[in-house]
Image 1 (cartoon, one colour):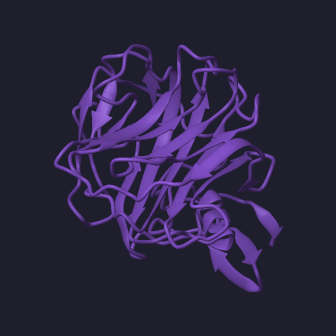
Image 2 (cartoon, rainbow, N blue to C red):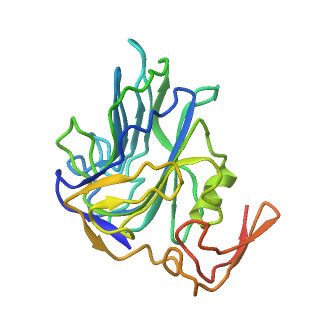
Length: 262
């Protein structure tokens, strides 16, 4: 299952996740139906000195993604993907990774699809001149942030957030193919739509359930069988020499995928 986003009022409010100032990672499966400057918000958290913004399109060019981290007083911490990185009406796996100790680039964006393994995108611009600001008590929202009039339109199937952890590319790929268990330190693990249209259950065990406003249930990512299906056919995937099988404790997809990754 997934949620269908059609308007600025439609969102999931997960409350205050208090994302760290040193590291965090946010992962989404989504299918946007627009990638222009008007329809752009994936998720955001308003903070004391700004806001985290993770958008399907920047406000300057179609198909760009902007990842912006709030900074104290001066400077900027953000990266903007190249034009046309995003594609409308295609299921995409999008990852935003922040690591304040990364001397090369603090903000990074990764993208994969149903037919391509996740990889870091090309950037139109990036800046690491700011110092991260501490989070305040505002909410982490999927569908829009609470200070903008620009909605996300399309489908969203899952949202996973790690706090105090910058996932490696290998871990990101494991997430894409549903081999990362929910017990590995996530603070939010939401499989959209499986718990109805009132409360979005957080399967991480951290209790960060979300409040759903206006969203309707739609079809799931067509990768394999539904989340938690006891009848899912086990797959075997090699990730840097390791192997794993589908399991209701791992991600939202069972299935019959076979092959090697990494």
